[in-house]
Image (cartoon, rainbow, N blue to C red; front, side, top):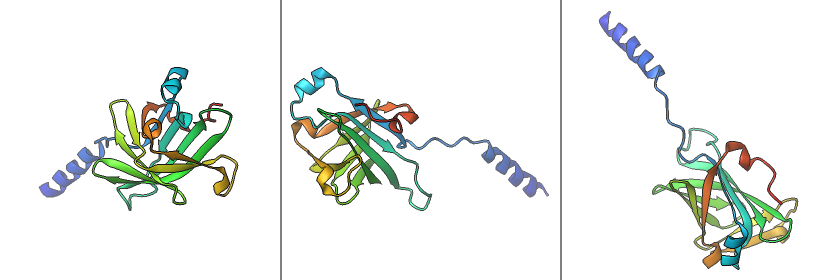
Length: 161
């Protein structure tokens, strides 16, 4: 009889344990000001965000869906792409839809660092096919992006124009 009581007590104790939030999920973004754009003359956009979503299921403990969005450096065009991010060696390697290249995300004290090792593509919002794609080459001004943690609803809001 004592074993049943101890086991029941253990289950009650476990029920009160709070599990930590997933360290990757969230909204991360950066808006570039005029000075930053002046210092990076080939920067592709003035606003960039990555939303790492909650895993679809517990089947894969290392795969996250994500949405990458950007606003062109000049003009009103906005871009977006879905991605599948795979956790490996403490980083998320995010493969863009339709062979659109990849970004590598790593955690920082303020949010994320997004590395563009080669190139990736984002599709102009409202277009279909590759005609509306923007290629972001991994050159000096588009190699690394510092993204700060933002409020959860920020990545769902309309992009700044």
